[in-house]
Length: 421
Image (cartoon, rainbow, N blue to C red):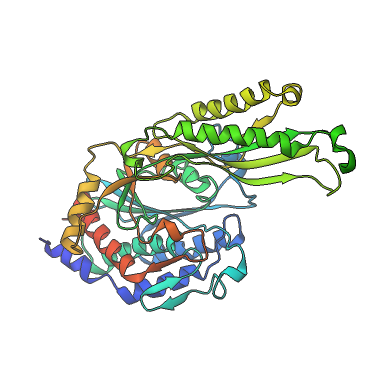
């Protein structure tokens, strides 16, 4: 089932090199917004340059990018951001296949929840643990393994293979947005997010909201003279629970396997500055799930109507309405067009290189860079090693064997898509 070129590239995929590179990248603490975001970009750029690729490593114009009317939002401050795109030498008239991945990781959280330093990777048999192991250093390593194998095998491509390695995915999509604005494009794109052996062809969106609720301060011993901002917020919170139920009725078939495909969740609540005072201010922040194909403006309007209806029915809130703003990440939904050949190409490559059960298609209830690439007219899906269920947790880990299998599958998919001479 394999051509000589395909067999040559597969033979050049080095499992030991994959394991070493995974440990190397996890050890770079590239938390969103930290200096290590820039460090890992320069590290990766040097490696891509050694493969003979045409490398574009640039300092992103942050003021200009943040001021763009279509900028998708950012949740952590940055003094700098670096873009990185590279492409194999031109071979002919074939298509450009983009391997895309984000280099940033979320903070490790409570250090006592980890078995040691989260940025010192731990190996147990075939499993590597650490922050960023599956989300998504493993996907980056799989992409690097494909590029290294193509270089080592000296297979001549008719098209080209591009690497887009981006910052800021975890907090809105800064890197992907800047990469596309710089003019880097392709004919198809695979993002190496952890997909647990499936193909993610659609993403729900996610919008960060902030609710500001005013109360009236008073001494706690005479709380009847004040109005608690906490009590006022609880009325809004209850209405938002009902809004979530309404928005999750009859989900799209690609999202039907999830208990709550389009979650509405308040993650931060801040109120009060003294235990014996009635709190006069509450600020809550959270995320609103965006349905497949839904205009984010419509999702925001539905949320704002819900809050306005609560205010209209409450004496205090009617005179002191809740303020709703939309800071941070603003992820629209995204989807690969039904019937596109890319999923079948990956399924066939998986069958010919790995075997076993077929690769099924599904959607994902979280936002990702997929919506930016698909929005730019680039057919895009997610396929990568690891499971999103352990991402962002102290249990984050990935199997090296899974990274190898993804690399082998993608290598053959790339060859069959861009063509060889």
